[in-house]
Length: 231
Image (cartoon, rainbow, N blue to C red; front, side, top):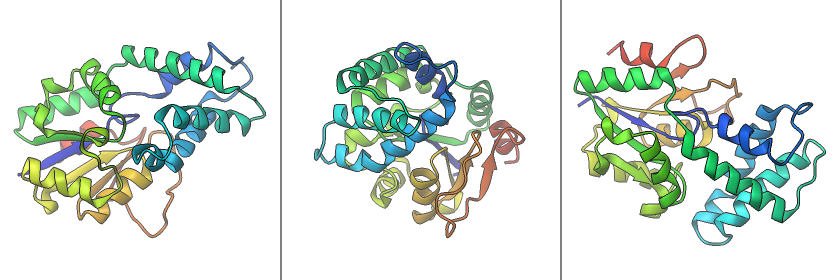
């Protein structure tokens, strides 16, 4: 069966919006490119995520590290207590997220055409499920087809989490498309698992690994809806 499996953060909703709202509570953002800080923060987050997942550092330490390092790159210092306060605000604003309109239409199309839908997302169990509930994803995706790294002890880009999805959802590699924004976690992870990789690159990032090629690109010119309508 044809299957579309999704990442969550910055794929199904615009993660920059809650980030900007939270950052504005703590930093003068008028002369700052918030998107560049956001992108840098995501990069630092990816660098230490496995350490947090394995318990070598706490999630709180990871959250503080990524925003402190990102702001430092732009000449702004933030104390650990300020970073913790930023994260609390960021988490609060994430309770107001909503699906990107194009994503909602694509999910409607997939559901109407009987395609299998699923999610693989990295992050702490409770935190990710709060976002899943806020986005009301179970309107389209069965709960048993949603895999959260913090819940299963595996994380993208590890091949084991994709293998787990194959078992849980009954996926066929050649008919499975993974859609995500992180080149390393989503594109590289999916390709190494033998799946088709759909890169949601609305922010125009360069590929982080020149040896890996994505199969399809979603950007401002080519929408997710148009992609799924081709099937």
